[in-house]
Image (cartoon, rainbow, N blue to C red; front, side, top):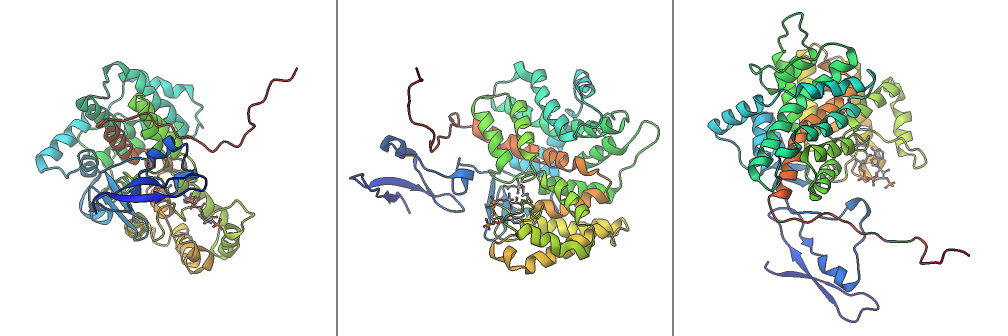
Length: 425
Ligand code: SDX
């Protein structure tokens, strides 16, 4: 319907305020409230529960139906039929690549996987037991020192080169953050391996002997990359967009996304799920922890459960659960006690009124940690892998922001502090 309007009547203001209502191709209409400032009004929406901060064409989520589309393609179909390199192309360009376009994209990424030798010295500044997410915040931000001058963010080609560099170098930097923690030598990327195989090689290979990535593990790794690639305006992506709105260097913007993702309420949840399952210890203890999660006076929450947008199953969690069963069976770990406990925890929670009433379902982080643990990834690397996967989403949104006229993001506030007063004396 053309020119839909919203009408706002406010006590004390004579005239009715007329606001345009904008319609997208999918999802809720939005009320354009920009005119309210001239009426001396702000909107108030802590946590941005009902705020559309931007227009985007990249990803659509229907939280009520548990739908996630990238460029219109359902995540379930991409997880089954596509791969991470193809999804990276889709998120950046809005269309799936032709075979020729994909071949060129993969080849270009492969030619950017090495990092400047100077950058490897940054790792030595960290303690060996530094959390790898702390290292990633540092070294990814440091990339801006290596490419600062060759970057015009208003030039589409420069933005594309940034995307290639980041997608290509994140696995190298991530694997190095793991190798640094165990004292093994950094492994240089290999262009004869695909993206997931190369990451596993850099993580678990050593100069002493040949390392051949397990194809089942590599496929599971690639699927995990696909499932974490992008997710609309989540906290870390919104952070990248806001940082980008000041014109900041894209590598610094991605570092801000890594920092935001680290929190246990966001990407840090996959690591927190494993810590929680370890703490629960056995199926018999599950009821006690469910009660803790329901207790309003207890800060404990069921990690891997709930979501700001999904009021249904997170479609990624459903794919991850199937993949979990497949991978653990392939690896002869189908009796993994952690998996059994996770499934029992999910069953009990989904039957409990507290979770049902609040529409709390497993999210992407609930099963991912169990697969990652099964394929040998240490728990403190789980969020690093989330950051590695989500880099394409972050840089796609950063690039989309800079591809059209934009303004610096600058939210306002409801001020409840002291009114003007004079300095005493
Ligand atoms: C990710 O945004 C994204 O898209 C993020 C993400 C992505 O791909 O980028 O999907 C990735 O971050 C997934 C979420 C991972 N986080 C966790 O698994 C941590 C556990 N979950 C919660 O912290 C929580 O559910 C959030 C942070 C995910 C969502 O928080 P909201 O939307 O602010 O929900 P809320 O805190 O307002 O909760 C509503 C109610 C509250 O109870 P009441 O006050 O109404 O009585 O539900 C309760 C909450 O206490 N609740 C939970 C709970 N999550 C919400 N109670 C127990 N356990 C939980 N996990």
